[in-house]
Length: 370
Image (cartoon, rainbow, N blue to C red; front, side, top):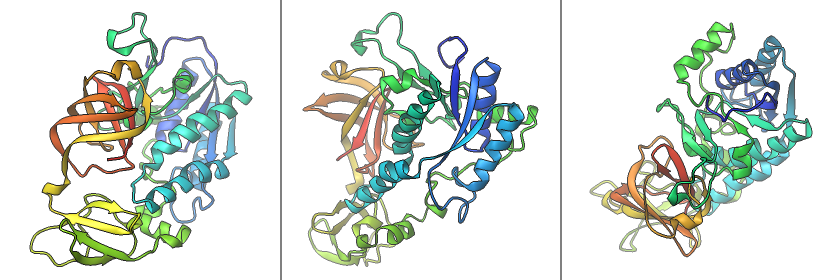
């Protein structure tokens, strides 16, 4: 069992209409919990342009059918304003500042496990559950020396191809204590098998896209429509300071980008820095994209607390979703997380998450600043 043993309780399960959250609800019910299904309505354009979004109108209909088949209540919760303030406005502000955000992490922290948890408690529920492929690990009976004190943490899901621990790194201790992740010990294949065994129509439903509010992942179009001020032409410079081209706005570029630069060079050039203050894009070679030490702020602590990171600690670390965690050393320096990798890493991107692991357990993480 992924979660600690507990007495049957009332649980709100976030149901997106996909196979993962549908099976999560069924497993919770099988474990004896009183389950309430809730679909979050978070984006006003649901269903109009992107039926693969987790918030599409058809998703709510699928979730309702699954809940009816399971015999559990189902509600649609309008969180459009909360989502706009916590996720959309932040998404736009980060791109405007020349950073590349991860809105899914932001949604998990502030919508699914903050706003939804508060609404769940108003319904008399003690826990929130989702269909994430990760595990919630309770504090150990005997505290590891490095941890400083007993703490909840996120552990990788057993399916390496679906592990979503990276996207849950910044849940607070209070949120983790009230979170159930029934799929953490399942593979995606097994989840689909269970759905088929239960006769769920969603058993073979395709995956939803990563950014639910940006159809076809065309974030440039989204920014032009919702923040037209980001269209602000400026200079593209190389590392010597020479102007080599022009850009349409720093918001439309990200570190490591090579396409759509429209500059004439004898060898490949990549975006290596974005300076929103002076509205410039800096380009360089592939070598210029490499760095060993990465700094992050807005730190969240998992298995280890701040005290355990005053001295250098061996970890493995990820700079982006789906990358293979790399050996590194982590330490807190003046309130910032400094992670030095054993080998140089390519395209370190401000705004993305830097997540550190001790084995399969999330140690800590933060938002990359440099």
